[in-house]
Length: 350
Ligand code: SF4
Image 1 (spheres, rainbow, N blue to C red):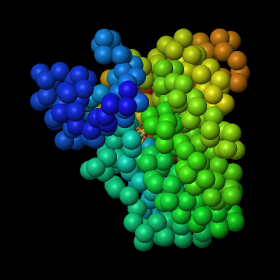
Image 2: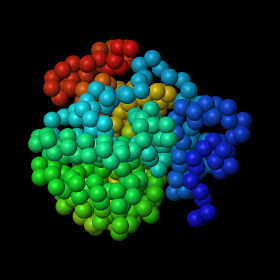
Image 3: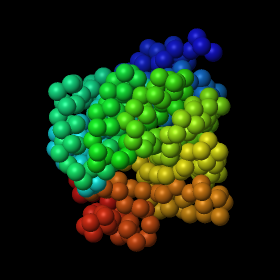
Image 4: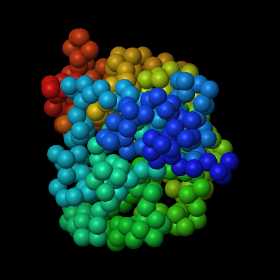
């Protein structure tokens, strides 16, 4: 088992039997645009006998990624429009994103920041940029919560995380530090005593939002990693993306949400896929998403229910996909209300 290596290139995919040599030309073209990485834990999970394996679909590149729809965009949720200094996104008054790193242990083929992450992406904040980001947080008393995302912040070394948490610990108005990560699932052994001590170094309340999309991702090892975090006093919530061919089925979603709750991870957000370039093969119509989510009612406990949300393109924030905020205007188009009461077309005009 331990002989399984990380997959980081088209060569590695072919050698691991995850791609056919005949598909090389298309895969090379994809690799020139978007990063590829699968950890050993994910490579082991893939069922090579199943051409529609939901784990492979999330991480193994597909020629469909070369098709970019007119409504797709490099910055689908409008990070750049709300970035006052490098590494900070300040979209809502009381919280900021701190994007310290744009590297991930795996690269999801539907990633909403696929143009920003990976070896060709925005990289890691250097010491000067990090200090400027901390200064921004220090100077904005209204910031109650700092959300470390990226990229996957848990790829940082415990020493680096410790430094970040210590700096945040000294900012009195910051009460909550949240990490968005896939690491407990894709590299569970990384959740060790050193990492957990770093996460707790701020003395603040720490949340981890765990990204997983299929119940098979919640392996015994992943569940044990989550148990270590929760036992250490770190609260956990989930985030998943509703993905065609992965979890667009009430039975699969119900199993996923139950697996989260069994693991002491409270289901939080179920995202409608964003309009990232070359990801149309993952998107389903909003009406279908609503049907699938409605089918969870009554089927699973209230504790297991996620909130189905749409990030409004352009950086206008999240909208709950319900009849009052996301209203059909016909022909697969919608009018979406943002949290300030503004109205936006979805999909947006090109
Ligand atoms: S882990 Fe998150 S940021 Fe990284 S590729 Fe996946 S969706 Fe994108």
